[in-house]
Image (cartoon, rainbow, N blue to C red; front, side):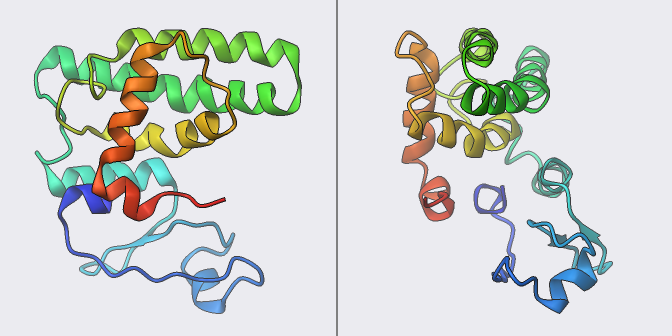
Amino acid sequence: GLEESGLSYTLRECELYPKPQWLLKLNPKGKVPVLVDDETSKATVESEVILDTIAERARPALDGAGGQAEAERATAFRRLVNEELLPAGQDAKFSGRGGQAALHRVLGRMDELIVGPLVTGGAIAVADISAAPMMQRLFEDGMVPKDFGRLHAWYEAIQQRPAFQKTKLEH
């Protein structure tokens, strides 16, 4: 989100085990990422809240192809990712057959929402950024069937973005 936003920031990386004391002071649970507001010194620790904070500060940079219909599409897509895709993906990966059917249904609904090449058209939106890490895992694990053409085209478009290339999760 920060890379796409154009906002200036300082990245501070850390080892996850053992957790460094400075991280535990910001977030006693030791979870990452953590966003620290330079103006207020307030730490934000939940990924989606961090993304919302960045989007608000960077507005209109992460609004996508703006309009009411596009905003509703982006909200629906993001809701699917966070409320349905995450649990369905985990079930499919670790539980087997029943999880595959649920994952297939969610991916189908996501595929239908994509305008192309990105969720709301040609401009990056918070919905795209929110989905990218989970979708990267699913694509790399071969869990997105080829018949979801818009999702495959979406992922190709996401992978081409310099911000994604810079922050891509390495396995």
